[in-house]
Length: 594
Image (cartoon, rainbow, N blue to C red; front, side):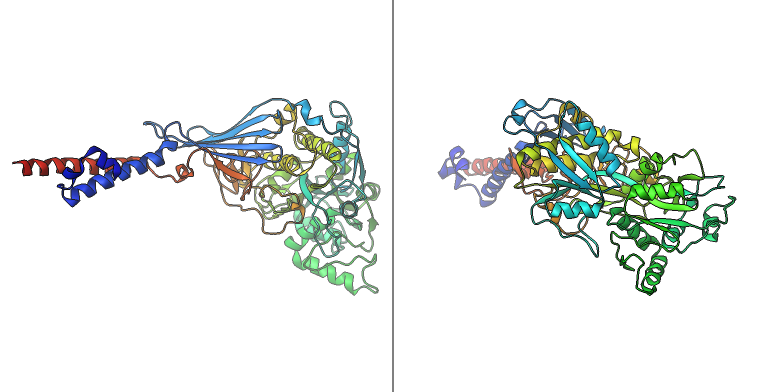
């Protein structure tokens, strides 16, 4: 009210009726409130959010269009990774749809000033090993010149050695789960998704005129001893019009602690619970129990697969592939590259990998596109691993498909080893993903590529930023369930799946439900499904994903600019009240003067 008193002398104001003074006061306060709220939300105003994560920062600017003739809103996310790192801008506009723009600059020499990359070694998943071998060899050369040693074993061995710190890093197809699993590490670590592949059913069946087709029932039946001959009615039902030989099935299993065993058991339990339970009962009823001492559960998967009577039991994927190749009637579960290396490259229908029936009723091969389509339905858990979904529909969905994960130490690790690890991960999740389909793996897609790079940048000591070439090599988006159902085989650029929230230093031991699968945004054309536009709302272009990041702080103007309040009606009301108050005052004063 001091403002009013400075304009109107006090003795004259007292002559004004209460309603006039009230109108003037309310009007003045309304105008002041509107000015405070609308100042940051003008035509050029914006809400700015800055996220600082280790050596990376993400700035999100949201601008609401208010000028006449414009509509909708534009959301832009700018990601600067490391000192001198590349600058990536992405977002969406209701008028133009999503976009993704990268302004490149190289990492500065200062990043390497205080550390020298140290040698590191790793072991684990034979399923992922063809990819790891290729990427390790690539980073041995310039411009990386890294010293990495990789020894293929199995997922269980990798997790065991990682926990006991007899290896620097491990690769596993699953987390620390299951009935008879190893103990998680006592030190902080992260799971970083690095590969995605389909578990292929490699077979050697003479006389086939077409590539073998299997349902989940026939595939699980073959590897559990439930189907004993190749001309079984269940196989005939999957292969109409194909002459099947009267030949004994030779199931080739892998009894070591393989992550692919866990995923395969998970698939059979999910798809064919009665068949799996019958298999478990048959194993337990044997004299002395399972022939090789491997215990299994009727309802919970684990990493071991018992040997089958009349079959062959091995302890490595390489041996499984070799046995199938050398035994007529043989069938075993492998990664595609192992089959290809054995000459099972698709040219001979008698020696190939099977097409598998999916939830849509289509028989599909374990190609990179079909694997990526299947994993569009997976949801990421807080620890960085995934909850698989074998019920996804679409003409190109292949199951069983799964991810493999790199396990890296975080807080307290040697910065010189962290330097090496970060350079390897930067390559693997960018340039390396571009090569993955050439040896049978699907590329992970933009959201998981950036999730992994950002996790290492944030949590691994000594981490360095991706190079300009690596920044340019990111995927442009992710396949979404809606796109998969429509038969789309390439992602819509700028549209990504939801990921878990930014991992903390000890996220490897995190528990909780899977990442939310609700739609956070849509691409141009209104693609729906469990995904979010790469805008920084929910899942940002930096890969930080959904969830709440405690490192986010609002900066700049008042955060009330983001409430969505329209200032125009309040402005009109305020001005009207001021006008009524002053007009009323003049009339009252005029009457009293006469």
